[in-house]
Length: 64
Length: 417
Image 1 (spheres, rainbow over the protein chains, first blue to last red):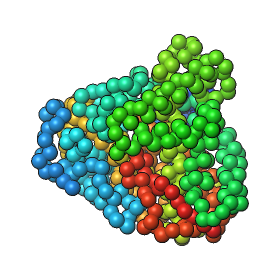
Image 2: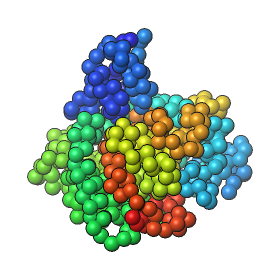
Image 3: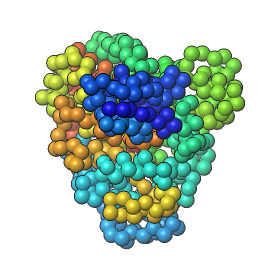
């Protein structure tokens, strides 16, 4: 799995960090998403899928 | 109450093609936690339909979960409440709309993005979770005070309102002693049955209060959100008026909603003792976190519909929303959409409910949602463990529910233990 984030679309809701904290973070200055791992571990893939599903701005793309 | 002959009152060519029942609708007697039956049933069968509102216009109402998501993320859908045909909450809001400074609440991208990013830093997942210990301390303190006081007592005054109020006052830097006055003014502004002049005066008061606070922080900055906004004014990024509009929005949204969720969930859990036991008997924070999402879904307290307007023709749910037509996104009904939540009218604290629309969806989703989550997780997780004998000091039919509020809840909640 490969993950990409769109920082321009991001609205800093924080849902991705709440769901997959080892893959996503938020910038201190405005909460915009920061990708920690473009290739998450196998044990993190379910959480990443959930994070993409709850992102209110559809700013997370997943490639399997 | 229906208006089968709803007329075009907006001048935008809107005519009713069938039944367009009046909105807002009443909840059924004896079902204080359920959205009105018509809306719940429409979620799966007629996810895009029409209603008649206060000015006799007939905007679309979106009740389906998938349809709400699609529209809330669609750039052809606008929150610009100055566009003709915008389906305002009431006459007061229509009048106020032309006086409100541009903010996250009434702008689309790219303007919206700029405003939103000025407000998000204090509400990131990590910043808010770092405050969990403070939320716990305030909660324990309020429960101590309640247990030491007379019973029965009003849980709204004792815990539900002071917990989020203290938090948002501390984060923003609003003196806590001013909170009561501000809350009273905010309630006037949100109340649908208040006269237009009174509403305008209350918006003016709230706005002036925040503008004064912004100017005070420009002169003497502190470590709080209003000081951050004041710094942006000093730097020439925004005007005092815009900073005040952001402040009012954060303050109002920051305590009314969580307060309603704390009190209303307490009623719901006391009425569902098997579900209450799940919270009371567990110290696992994941149990409380899962329970909070389900209570957010089930209670759907933002029940007056988010207001939008179509900028272009949009095909959705077998209908065509024409450019210039109003759109009402009724969040609570999507939370009962059986296509997403099996047995949607059942409160099930073990359910995975995170797809709910309690905080909305799309670019305008709640900024303070992570703070609300921490407040609710701590409040529910603590209240029933510390007071296992908590019970209503009245019968449920005597409780006055906020049918008229923009956020649903209870006015008072007499409890004993």
